[in-house]
Amino acid sequence: MKKKTTAYKLVLWVLFGFAFISTIHAIVEALIFCYLHYGLSNGFLDIHFQYYIPAFSILMTFVLSILTILSIKKKLVNFDIEQSKLPWFLFFIFTTIAISNSIITKQLSDQKVMLLYDDLSKSEYLGQLNLVNIFNTIKLSSLGSQWLIVILFVMATLFLKKTSKF
Image (cartoon, rainbow, N blue to C red; front, side, top):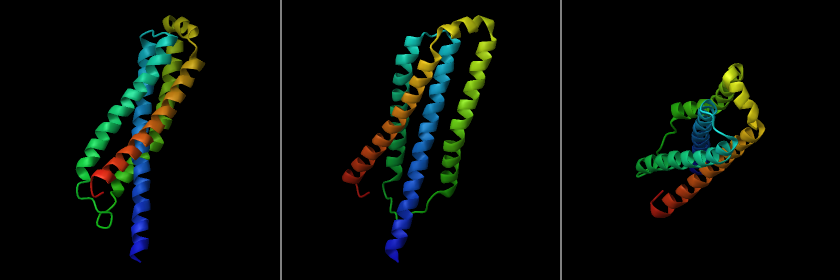
C-alpha cells in the first residue's frame, strides 16, 4: 500500500511541476507580446523584431527560471515526498494562469494591433512591416522558450538530486 501512495504522490507532484512550468512559460509569452507592442508603438523595423524578440525571450526565460530554481532550492532542503502535502491552492492558481494567460494575451494583442491600424499615422508604418514574419518569430521564440524552461528545470532537478538528499 505504501508503494501506491508514493507513486500517487509522485504523479501529483509531477503534475504540479508541469503546471508550474506552464505558468512560467505563460509569463514569458506575455512579456514577449508586451515587447512586440512596445516595438510597434516605437517604430521598430523588421530586423529589430527578428533578432530582439528571440534574444528577449531567451533572456527572460533564463532570468525567470534561475530565480525560480533558486527559490525552490531553498524550500527543498528537507523535502520528503512521503510527508509533504501538495499545495492545492497553488496548483489551482498555476493551472488557471497557464490556461487563461495565453488566451487573454493573444486576445489583447489582436485588439492592440487593430487599434494601431486605426491610427492613420501608424497604418503606413504597419503596412511596411512583414507581420507574418514577425508573428512567426514570436511563435518560434515562444516554443524555444518553452523547451528551454523544461531543459533548465530537468538540469536543475538532476543537479539538486545529485548534490543533496532530494
